[in-house]
Length: 483
Ligand SMILES: *[C@@H]1O[C@H](CO)[C@@H](O)[C@H](O)[C@H]1NC(C)=O
Ligand SMILES: *[C@@H]1O[C@H](CO)[C@@H](O)[C@H](O)[C@H]1NC(C)=O
Ligand SMILES: *[C@@H]1O[C@H](CO)[C@@H](O)[C@H](O)[C@H]1NC(C)=O
Ligand SMILES: *[C@@H]1O[C@H](CO)[C@@H](O)[C@H](O)[C@H]1NC(C)=O
Ligand SMILES: *[C@@H]1O[C@H](CO)[C@@H](O)[C@H](O)[C@H]1NC(C)=O
Ligand SMILES: *[C@@H]1O[C@H](CO)[C@@H](O)[C@H](O)[C@H]1NC(C)=O
Ligand SMILES: *[C@@H]1O[C@H](CO)[C@@H](O)[C@H](O)[C@H]1NC(C)=O
Ligand SMILES: *[C@@H]1O[C@H](CO)[C@@H](O)[C@H](O)[C@H]1NC(C)=O
Ligand SMILES: *[C@@H]1O[C@H](CO)[C@@H](O)[C@H](O)[C@H]1NC(C)=O
Image (tube, rainbow, N blue to C red; front, top):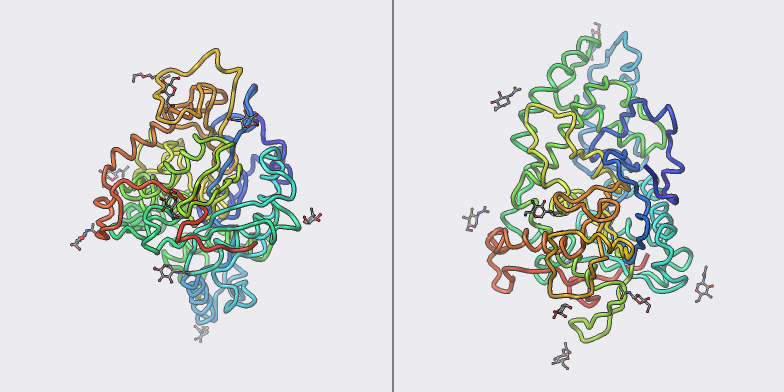
C-alpha cells in the first residue's frame, strides 16, 4: 500500500510502532482535527499504473475551528458547576486538573465560530499539498476559481477557501484567486449551491435521534457512574460524559497541545463515543435519512458532468460570457453538507444500517475518518489508455462522448481511496466514469421530484435540477471573495 508521495502524511505525528497505539484524537468523530485516514480499504492512493489524472476536485469541510456559541456556553457551564462545587477532590490524577480548569479561548467574543490557528495550518498545508499532487493541472501564476458555501453564521467556510487558496496559489493568491461564495438561501440557488438543504423545507437534521438517544442511554450512564465514584464534591452528568472527548478534540487543536480531557476515558469508552458520532451523521445527514442522502445529488450530478466534459472544456455562461473552468475543482462547506454529499456518492451503498444499540467493529462508516475538521471527499478523473485491453463490463454510455472506455473516476475520503459500491472494476478499484454517471443518474431517477422531496413550493424551482455553478461563474447566487 502506498501513500501519496506528496501527502502531508509525511509529517504526521505518529510513525512506525507508535501508530499502533490508540490515539483518541483519531476517534472523536467530527470534533477532531484532520489526519489522513487509515488505509482501511487496502487500495494505494498513488495514481494507478498506466493512468494520468486529468481533472481533480474536492468538497471539504472547513478547517479546525473554535467552538460555536452553544458549545462554548456549555464549557462555561461546566466550569461554573466545577467551581460551584468548590471541593472537588479525587485520588485519580487524570481528573485532578478539573478543580482549576477553565476554557482555553483567550478572546471568546472574537474567536467563537472562527477558524483556529490549527485550521490555518491544515488549510495552507492542504493547498500546497494539492498543488504539489496535481502540479500538471494548474499553470504557474494563472487565475484560479474556487467555490464555498456562504455560511451565514460565520465566515469560517469562505475563510477556509481563502486559506486553501493561499497555500495552493502562493503569494499572488489575492490577485489570482476568486472564490464564489454561493448564497444557499437565495432562491436562485435551488439545488445549485453548496448548501442545498437550506432551501429544502422538509429537511431536518435530527442529529441522529432517536438512534443516538438509544445509544447514549446505553453507553453513557456506566461511564458517568465510574467517574462519579472517583470524585467527591462534583457530580458528572451524562452530557458531561460526551463533553469529555469533545473537549479533548477542540482544546488540543485550539491550544496546540494535548488536552487533559484526552486522558480521562478508557479506549473502550472513547470508541463508544465515536459510535455516537457515527449515528449522529448517518441518521442526521446521511444514508440513514432519505432526504439527507439525496439533497446533494443535483450537485454531484453537476460535478460529474463537469468531469465528463473533460479537462479541455470551456463553457458559455448564462450571461453569454466564456468560462474557462479550473482543472482542480475546489469546494468548501460544513460537516452536514460534506456528509450529505458522501452519502450520495455511492461509497457506502452496500453498508448495513447502523444499529442503535450495537456498535459493529467492522463497519466501514466512521465519522472520525470522514468529517473531521477539514474532512474531504476528493474525486479524480483518470485516463488509463493501457487499461483499455480489459474494459469494464456493463457500461452504459450517456449523451456526452468526452469519456472513452479508458476514462475512470476514483474517490478518496481524507486521502484514502474508497471504492464505489458495485463499481470498482477499473484500475486501482476505480469506476468507469460513464458508469458512475449512470449510477448518479439512477439515484436522481429514484428521487424523481426534488421539489416534492423537499416539500418546496416556489414555482420557479425545477423538479429535477442539476447544479450549474461548476460551469457558470456568473450565477446570481455567487458572491465573489478574494483570498
Ligand atoms: C466544601 O466543604 C466544606 C466542608 O465539608 C463545606 O462546609 C462547604 O460547604 C463545601 N463547599 C461547597 C461549595 O460545597
Ligand atoms: C505575481 O504576479 C506578478 C505579475 O504577473 C509577477 O511579476 C510576479 O512574479 C508574481 N509572483 C510570484 C511569486 O510568482
Ligand atoms: C442570501 O439570500 C437571502 C435570500 O434572498 C438574502 O436575504 C441574503 O441577504 C443573501 N445573503 C447575502 C450575503 O447576500
Ligand atoms: C409539507 O408542507 C405542508 C404544508 O405546508 C405541511 O403541512 C407538512 O408538514 C410539510 N411536510 C414536511 C415533511 O415538512
Ligand atoms: C486536452 O487537450 C490536450 C492538449 O491539446 C490534449 O493533449 C488532450 O488529449 C486533451 N484531453 C482530452 C480528454 O480531450
Ligand atoms: C445570449 O445569447 C443568445 C444568442 O445570441 C441570446 O438569445 C440571449 O438572449 C443571450 N443571453 C444573454 C443573457 O445575454
Ligand atoms: C436493540 O434494539 C432492538 C430494538 O429496540 C431490540 O429488538 C434488540 O434486541 C436490541 N439488541 C440488543 C443487542 O440489545
Ligand atoms: C454486470 O451486471 C450483472 C447483472 O446486473 C452483475 O451481476 C455483474 O456484477 C455486473 N458486472 C460488473 C463487472 O459490474
Ligand atoms: C457517441 O459516439 C457513438 C459511437 O461512436 C455515436 O453513435 C453517438 O452518436 C455519439 N453521441 C454523441 C452525443 O455524440
